[in-house]
Length: 275
Ligand code: KIV
Image (cartoon, rainbow, N blue to C red; front, top):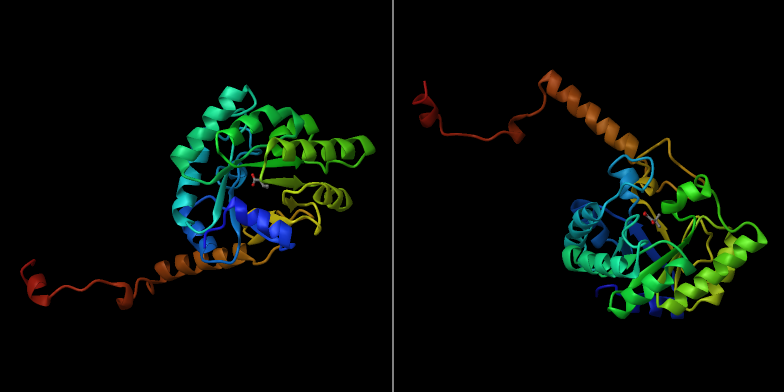
């Protein structure tokens, strides 16, 4: 049965943990679809992990639609959420609604996510009123990396923690179906999770959130040099992939690949006529 926003609400009410993973392409989406993971985020982290930018600021609506539609085609059984990229919703409520609608129509995902607390409440209300589910995102919101002065844990002072609690309550009031809490202290995430009735999905926010999300390249260990505190490597794909690339290179150069097993045949009578 397909995961929906209603599944998220039910899982929070039952105390069942929600799993989410990022995804950006059709092949990986099919693997996620065949897994037990509940939901998929086509994050604008694709700017980093797929496009090689230093941050998410250059990601466009076209990028998000291209990658999200591939994921939606590969992941028919999961709730697929698409990030709204930087400056696709900050300018005005009208801009936010137009772009959220475009994502739904063109990418065929089931929800959008946008970053920010009280300052984006008018945009969230308008999108929700149009019948589009919205996931909130507070804490270390990467689109504001320059305002934060880097990728830093948020909510560590009394005022910053109170602000995040107020932001979470405002997002719930605006109608979000879930809130991503990124890089905040676990005790603050626990308080927020107990105060809101919608599920919290943590990344670097401790085990008391209602669910967890990780970037797939990080959790699969595809970049050996990148393992921040909140990431666990569930595999070491960078080694597996490097070994495969080098074995392929060696076999081609030594003439052992392709072997007969990987080669097409033709009738010898046909061949004779070609000389
Ligand atoms: O863009 C992204 O992948 C995200 C997650 C890290 C929550 O927003």
